[in-house]
Length: 140
Image (cartoon, rainbow, N blue to C red; front, side, top):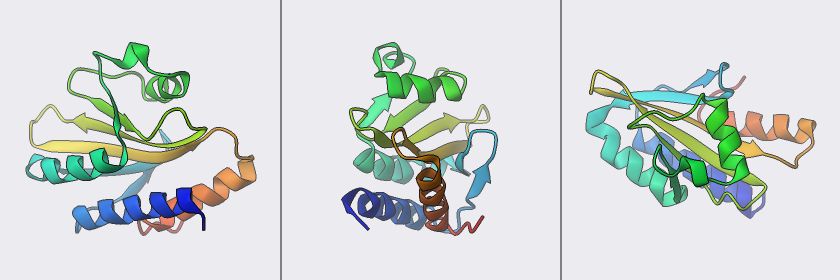
C-alpha cells in the first residue's frame, strides 16, 4: 500500500480500537468522519491522536500556522477557546487532521477526522477517502 497509507491505516485502526463501541459517521457538512464520546474517555483518545498527529493548533497559535492548516481551520469556521486542531506534519502535501471540540455540557467531546490531499487528482482523492472510511467500518 505504501508507507503513508500504512501509517494512516494503523492510526485509524488504533483510534477505532481506543473508542471501542464508538459510533463513526460521515459528516457531509465538513466532509470528514465524526465521532462523539464521553469526557471520561478523552485522555486515552487524545493520547492516540497526539501520538500520530504531533502538530497542535489552538486559539493561541493558529494565526502562525502554515497555509494548509489555515485552510482547514477556515473550513471549520475557526477555533474557539478549548477547541484544538491536530495535524500530521503540515510541511507535506498530504496530511491528516483531527478537530477536537469539547461540548458546552462538559460531558462530551466531538472529533472530526480526515486526510487532506492537496496534490492528488480528484479520482485518487475519492479512492483514498473511500479506503479511509472503510477503516472505520463505513462503506459509502
